[in-house]
Image (cartoon, rainbow, N blue to C red; front, side):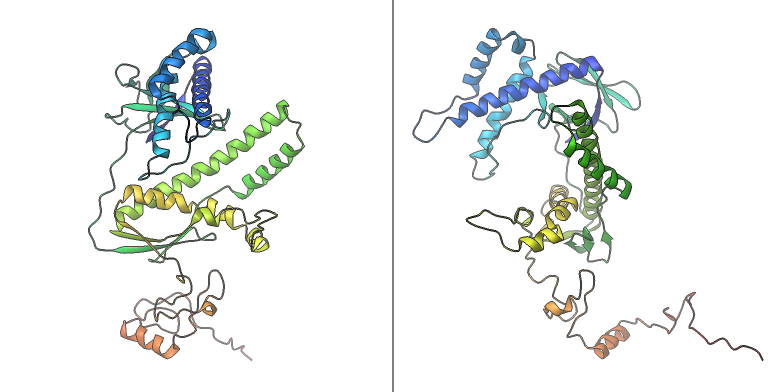
Length: 395
């Protein structure tokens, strides 16, 4: 998907909001129809029957007829595709669920050349045709894919509009250098590479986190339905969107860099959904290690480190080159001798093998040609630091 920032006028924004409301209304009606179906009853209405029902509803309700029929029919088509994906055993997906106002805001348009088109106005500005709204401007941050057949307009919780043209980009070509890299995902260090690089996913700055907590406390005291509560929610959503943008930008740049540098990328096969699931459980089936998990705040740290997003983007950009290995004892096994001992992991950031002999380690360094002087250099290029000496005072 090639996504761009949409810049509608106030009048166009009102039309886009109506499109989002109509698409959500039609989608929820389809969900309600299928919720009554169960094995043994007559099958739920399909796409063509739902389109005929939509035509009757538009004739009975003027507010629905005032919207775009293309947007409403496309919502039914999207629901049909989502239902087919749910029943597909080869590509299982979640059951189509209800869409909520303020959270699920968007619609899709298909049929380039007939229902929509795109043009470039200036160096940094382009326009896309939206039914009932006309030409809507967007930021031309990169060229629009010429083979795009549809696009989706969305609005996030921070009130920002985006247009995404449905095109699957090609994979990143492999460098063909035979190099492999291992990635250890963590909380303090988001991604530790076998090359020695430590990558950290950026988040909110200290001042931004303080402002977020202050607004969250204000939200807890605000009365429901008040204008003050709406303003505070919007301010919190803007901070959350800023954090999400930074996390996505980091994952995109890191995944592209790794796909260009290495032929094989190995990651741990972690069950992130189970690791981030609530540990409290129920009264009948209480959870285990609830206090330990709550103290580490593991779930929030995992989600903020973009574990799943990084691997998912690697699989998209380097298909067939990402290998998942068992994570058992990867943090307790010595990479030099292969011994597994939990005592070797002294802390989260310190690993000291309990079996490797110091003399043997020195012999390995000598065999590899790693000569080290007393000052900490390699014997060729002299370091700046010097050995400490006693200062002799003159009599």
